Structure formats: C-alpha cells, structure tokens
Image (cartoon, rainbow, N blue to C red; front, side, top):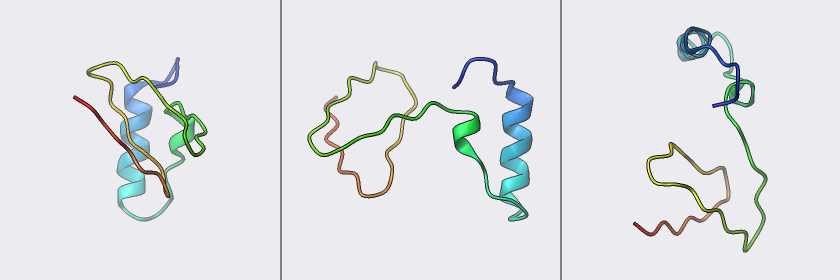
Length: 61
C-alpha cells in the first residue's frame, strides 16, 4: 500500500468499482513497479503481490 492510504478510502473505492459504475484506479492505492523481460524482484514472505498482463512468474517458496 502507498503511504497515507486510508483503509476506508480503499474499501469505498473497491465497493464502488464492484458495482461496475467506475473503474478502480489501483495505482492510487498500491505501489507499482515496471517490469521487463528477465527482471527479478525479491518479494519478502507474507507480502501481498500480483503480476500484470503479459507476465510470467516463477515463485519459489
């Protein structure tokens, strides 16, 4: 999550987007990192994460 994001603001935005009335602007609430072929990211255990379109993930537990 970005610094300064209030939980109530995010929940409200998610609920509004779920109705289909608006599209969620996720970059307003969460950090994003550009990735290109052969990039590596160390993501600490327990960190919520996801990948974007056209990404292949090798996740070693």
